[in-house]
Amino acid sequence: MPKILQLFNQETQLVKGLLRNEERAQRQVYEKYASKMLGVCMRYVVDTMAAEDVLMEGFMRVFGKIEQYKGEGSLEGWIRRIMVNEALGYLRLSKKMEVVDLEEVQMHPNYLMADQQLEEEELLKMIGKLPDGYRTVFNLYAIEGYSHNEISGMLGISESTSKSQLHRARTALQRLLSEWYETFQSNQDYGKASD
Amino acid sequence: MEKHPIDDLFSRKLSGLNREPSGKVWERLQKEKQIETRWTAGRIRWMVAAAVALFLIAGNVLKDFWKTTESNQIGQVVTPNRKVDQSVAPIIDSASLLKSAQPPQLPDARTIAVTENPVKIVSTKVRNGFDEQHFIEQPASSEPTELDKIPVAVEPVPAMAVVQQDPTTASNLVGVELKNVVNENKEERKETARVVIVHVSVEKEDASKPSRFKRMLKQLQNAKDGEKVDWEEMGISPKKIFAHAGNE
Figure 1 (cartoon, rainbow over the protein chains, first blue to last red):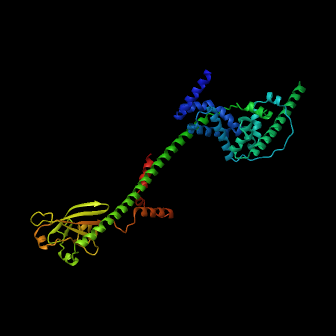
Figure 2 (cartoon, each protein chain N blue to C red; figure 1 turned 180 degrees about the vertical axis):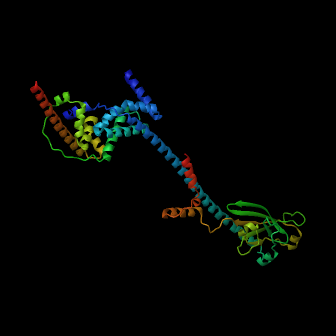
Figure 3 (cartoon, rainbow over the protein chains, first blue to last red; figure 1 turned 90 degrees about the vertical axis):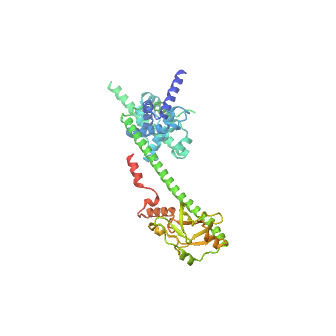
């Protein structure tokens, strides 16, 4: 309990500093949240340079619009929402939200094995291989936890489009996981054979 | 509701994804902030300048409007007085008036001759674009009594030049027609000195000149047509504004 209070106090102090446009507070906020937020940006905008651009614009917005933060919810959650919106804006501007049809695949990868063996870097690469429209809806629904209704509002699409995009994203990821699993098994077999 | 295994796998592994940004991001952020600050300050300055310009223009327009309104009101007040004067006193024959008119006695002062005694301007006020002049006849011998004060209404008549001003302002010559509110006893009037109060309204500005608002509209039309704009007509000096903007 005291730790929560301490965190709350710290966050309040940071917000006050941001409201006074103090550079020290801005630097603290940046150092505290930059790496997490770059991770968020990377999930939407796969390219590192572009993700850094989005991060920078996002922090500009955070510092410029701090008076809009009413203290409802955590500061981190508020910053995360800003970053997500910035990433969506970037994708919208670069017109990368087109819908691409992928072939339906009926593969059932070994999720337990994937969970144990796959590192976040590889999963990030898999997400990066998805078309932007699929990736965006998948990120918003599966990772951020938005509903289809919310996603339709954020992206300006219908709920059914959001659902179909999610379904296709899952199918594409299943295929990528199956490919990974096949490679993984063959590598293991090769290792056993060489032993 | 149970989560889809794909959603669950990616959510658990990627929700806490961290990536360290390069050091250049913070530097770029600082530069962007500086640019934003300058831009905001510049925008505020321009807004202030625009507000001041608008205020001045609005002030000029309102001033013109009030001028016009007040001059109209003066005209309305004067007209019934003339009628009253006419009814009370007969209008003096203009030919006799011209005969009795004297040349200016003093080169620098405005003079008017109504009778044999010259009349001097004792005070001049400028009100609402008109010169309001008070004339007084030189007393002949003794001080005038209340009965001897004879009001004389003077109204501008372009054709008759009785009032002559300073030679430098000769263009402002105004003719007057005197309506004498005469007492019954003319002889008595000749003997005693009298005070003649004459109100002469001299319009300073050329009546044919268009109002400031119309001139501003014309300049705006010029700007729209791509013709030369006379900023002085607009009441603003862009050179000064740009000079201030450049200094800051």
